[in-house]
Amino acid sequence: MFPLLFLMFTLVPILELYLLFQASSSWGFFNTFSVVVGTGILGAYLAKREGREILIRLQEKMSQGGLPANEVIQGALIFAGGLLLLTPGFITDILGFSF
Image (cartoon, rainbow, N blue to C red; front, side, top):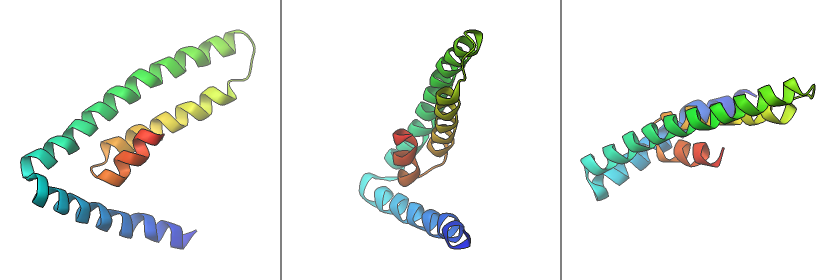
């Protein structure tokens, strides 16, 4: 478990910084900054919208007496995806959109 956490907390940020510097040198600082801020705003909007839909489906399922296992898992993935989209960087954005 330690090697995975080590990779996650050291190599991923280093790779993210490298990609941000590369994008900034080819696209320019303002365009790179706009993409990073834009994906953060879009991620917050999508997480809020999808989170509401999951809550509604969860409540419907529970009112019918069913177990909302799929809704809970989907809600956790939406939450994780929203957090990844709020984190600046291209790798985290790709992972966040895939969630």
